[in-house]
Length: 457
Image 1 (cartoon, rainbow, N blue to C red):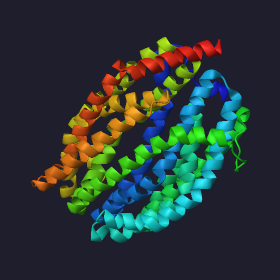
Image 2 (image 1 turned 90 degrees about the horizontal axis):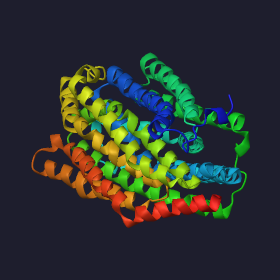
Image 3 (image 1 turned 30 degrees about the vertical axis):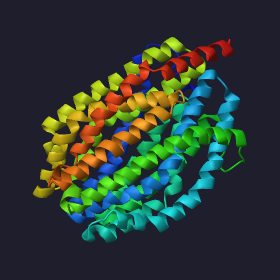
């Protein structure tokens, strides 16, 4: 199978069918990725106690905050690659990938060391429950050792998406998911390794996903000359990657810090509450299964059409793709709110944990469609290089709405309903993002798109 045969040209065809065709493999990959993390929760929840479940739920966030800047840079690479693909600029694509690989290796070791040293300190700041502490540190340290695989896989998947190839990532996740499931059942269920076994399975799966992505890029994308090892970098290209990627990464970092503050609040409610929110989060992820895929489609669609100078197509996709994502997410959210109890019961038999999980579902899931629309617009704007406005909105809905409202609920004795802040932030984000298409900045983006068409002619 050639790389060209699996690419979706987002500059041609009907807008929604093209976006959906691109999004479907990513959506299937998201199902696998959720299965990937859900297996950890299922196995740990059934073979261990609530404190172990709480440890797995809380220990991933310190690593997330350390990696998020680089993962944002990977998103920046994907955006730049999609714009180059829209222009048909093969030389630019080669230079972007060469420089991105150099940056991956330059960043991997420092971030791994930082995770091992700073991770436990962040867990301490998060006030991890005492009965979950040892397992949380163990899970964090083992998964931190897989930083290179985590970073490498996400970078390579972003490059493939930017090129219009969303199918390859699906096969990478198939390999990863199988390894993770087998590893969890063997290490946790078979050998009784507990949380450490779940972490080991997760790390091995991510490393294999990265290895598979390297094989695919070298075998099926020879035209971009993807290097396995660092092969130097172009300073100007590096500056461009950092210009687009660092704001995205910092946005993610601020978001991750906010999540740590929320997790700290959740931790003060005890292991039962943390475990319940973790279980409900798996159901919420199923409801949100289309969001990442449609958002990736939105980013690549806008990037390719902006690069190709197709202004009318750029304008039409600006609302169609995010609203389609919102409609699908609304249907999933309502369905799982009504019939999600049997799914929740798969994760744990603890009645108290299930009660918290059910409460979370009722409070959050009916509003996830608002987040789908908000995130779709944000990704669409990122694809054309508009970073500032979405970043400001994204930061404000977290720091001015979600966090204060959650802590306020706790302060008045309603900490068990702290997740309501999530729903409020979803609604506020959508309301704040929609008016962008009436601004002068959007008109300027469309004018630049017209200029791109004139330059290409």
